[in-house]
Image (cartoon, rainbow, N blue to C red; front, side, top):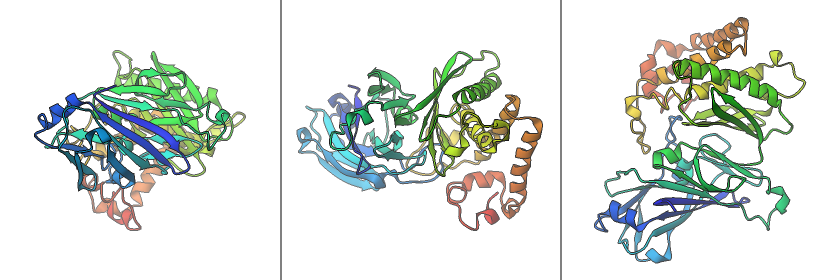
Length: 405
């Protein structure tokens, strides 16, 4: 077991609640509390990197308790997402249990029902800090248990469930359930986890294994088309960012896709991305993909999030080093990190020959017209828009086009 270890259980599918246990070894307790002289701090992030808005994930955390071995310790809330534990015994590990309500289909939080599970560790994993709210580089472990669903489903309905994540496996079974590890909390939370049944598309880009795993598609997708098109896009971006080595900065990469009736979005991570799309955005056998504009948009989304694996994950604003996950991290450079990415996502569809010049110019025309039609461009610079993104761009209302560039 890792010095700080989280165990995730999926048994309350009807209630949409993950059961979480957090174990902190006594050696870590001694280190962080000065051998018991100070309290221990637990925090849940208020936002997730890549989505610049305070979301207060702690609103879904319930029933936080200390184990019986540390029954004399006191637990109190410091603010809406921070807790302090005092009077800890240094003779035993500390174990806490809690539940997290998860019924958000977006790529930002967590979801659990009888058809699938998904979570970002920012929604489930409390950060362990010292009394000054400082975090040391302490190894983290994550165990994902197989669901026990005798009361809900027949065994055959979940025997095919698998775990897909970019986290480093330590000891897992053939379906991916078991133990994973990360060198610290920042690494842990940068790896979303998808659980359920998947359609898998595999390819290699310049020697690096890539996969797209799809949940929610009601029929088989055109796997050959996806592998061909995504390989071309990934190859082109690796060649752009790594012209000398032509090697990606990660050992593997995952596109985690949730296909729904209506939805669109993506969130970047260091060796994966979580994507939300309409089922009709995906390619299916027999379709004329040259006339499939929704599929073109989907490839643009994939291109955008893959570009972020370099632009914002490995090259980032100084204000994001390190991330402060308890408050807005303002920067005037989002126009660069998001704007350049938005420019290049379409350009790489052209460079990889997924679209022709006429199709590319139509996409540029659409983007340019959207900007020109917004009166807000006369009121804000792109730098100011970047700074205000937390409260304006990510919290749009009917006046947003008049106020934001």
